[in-house]
Length: 153
Image 1 (cartoon, rainbow, N blue to C red):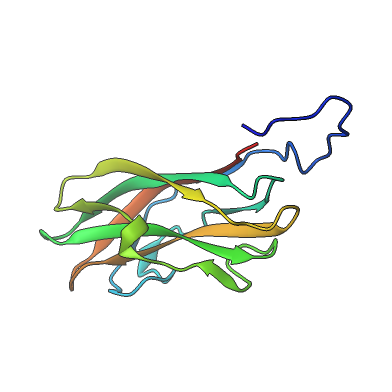
Image 2: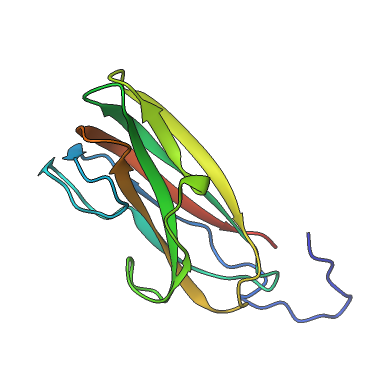
């Protein structure tokens, strides 16, 4: 927690709001590279814009319910970009298996993860969107995705 000095003027940079998005629609994918393409169902971007607090730190929580048509994995991961438009802007944190949430096999399971973003520029607006892929040729099914950005003050 940031220490505040007596008489210090607090601003919106000290306490920006938590933002979150929840998308319940079910959709299918077959791509083996991260992106937002689908092969069927109801897809909507799952993402939020957020303002970096004075600390430059934001906690991301994300996840969803997933399954696969085979013994392969269905995977989601956050992508963080500069700017308020979800899915647009300079990439700050790229799609990577290092930050992923995955389910392997045909049993539908709900999973989640968290990621601490550090070194953000205070007062700057960023956006995060969940992207997805399958590990090998197969069909993944995703639904009930969520992402929350909570500024650390």
